[in-house]
Length: 253
Image (cartoon, rainbow, N blue to C red; front, side, top):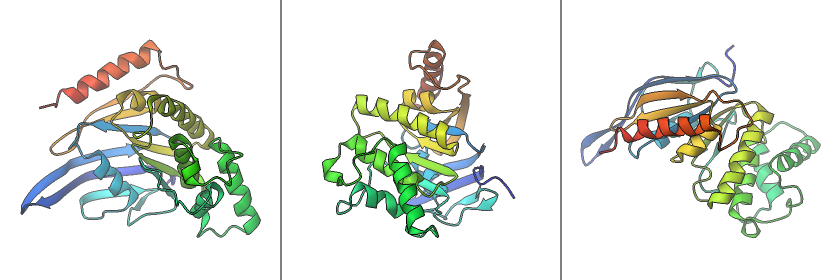
């Protein structure tokens, strides 16, 4: 049996019908993400970043090619694939503990095991002491921490992140990037990050996949061979950021 953390994207084509015309969004994209790897995906608008993530989540099955997770075709959403969006999507009538606990709603764990697991993940994201707080009482960064805890609480093999820090101020975003790096090293699961922030992509990723637009294809894969934990001012990272930016801008019209 294949490792549940492996993702195989094989010659994937995706198009939409717009005004009775075919809009090609992905054009023969192939990529393998190894278990425990952190892959960042960047590219101009129209390169299919978010579309690809929707396919990985299993929200859209209308495409050509094949996507396998753990050796099995993706046929829909799965508890083994956690997802964090740009907006936290917490339920406003539930406190942090109950919002995180929703991730275990279909779990076979006992009540005490669920309580312990929720507590551990609230602590993992640094929200100990805020278990009884409601979303409106949290800052944007704290709400995203709760959303990350909810996505991780059932211990998925893969975490998919769609611009998770895009709506946050620069300082909060920087702090949560560091937290995400720490969580990834602690949980040792595969992570796929879609982002417009090249600095973020390079700082967090083992590899940065640069997509070219119309239709989305892989233009370049940039290995980030800088050990963790990383320093943002590391000249090696700065050089890689320039390389990724130049690869993206080559396709700007």
